[in-house]
Image (cartoon, rainbow, N blue to C red; front, side):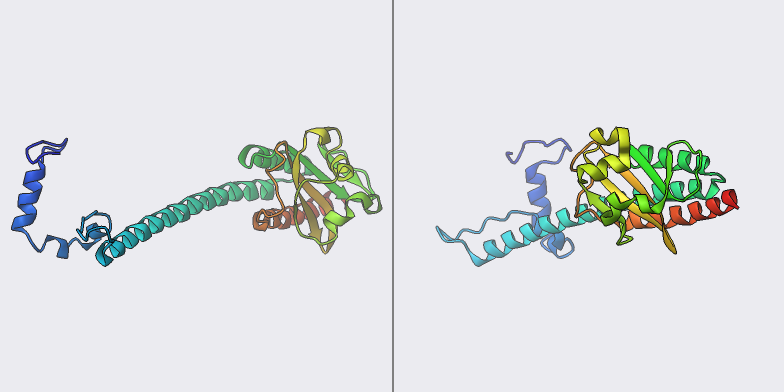
Amino acid sequence: MSDTQQPANGVSAKQVADYLASHPDFFNDHQTLLEVLHVPHDSGPATSLVERQATMLRDRNQQLTINLSDLLEIARHNDMQLQKTERMVLSLLDALTLDELMVALEESLCQDFAGDHIAVLLFNDRSLDVNNLRVLPRDTAGVIEPLIKSNFPTCGQLQPIENRFLFTDNAPEVGSAAVVPLVKGETIGVLAIGSTNPSYFHSSLGTMFLSYVGEVLSRVVSRILHEELS
């Protein structure tokens, strides 16, 4: 840009230069600008120490900006997850029957948390007629014993036999899953969330949210079972 060329904001390069010349202390009050400005420093073919320091400061500033952006994105994601979790927990707590519980669970996990298939198994010797919920004796769950014996959620691609046991007819569509044991003194059931994406649930995925969901669901299921079977 020449000294007389007018940029979009109507201030010319010459006006900027004249202003800085008449305000030699300008950068004392605006030192952060020095981190982003490129100021040539003639030192021949060698790179001067001043240039090297300025470059390092600019690079560091850019990296800090990227890190801050990443932190803000993580914070926004966590805030959204918290809001979704709050909605789900309130819906579960409002459920008075297992049918209502399943409706609340499926709506939340499929709509808010992008699960493609939900499976809930309860271990009980008495039969219960509840849509989309299977009730079976505890001793028939040997196939998934490795997934529930630790009482902690498991994420990843399941063995074919585990997949079929949990998701039955939907098993061919499940590429990855999260399996959450439901524990109230003892293992009372299991929640399985399936995704058609083989990479959606993976072994390095954090399980804090899943553990929390499992704890809430375990308490609500235990309370409803006690009321319905007593």
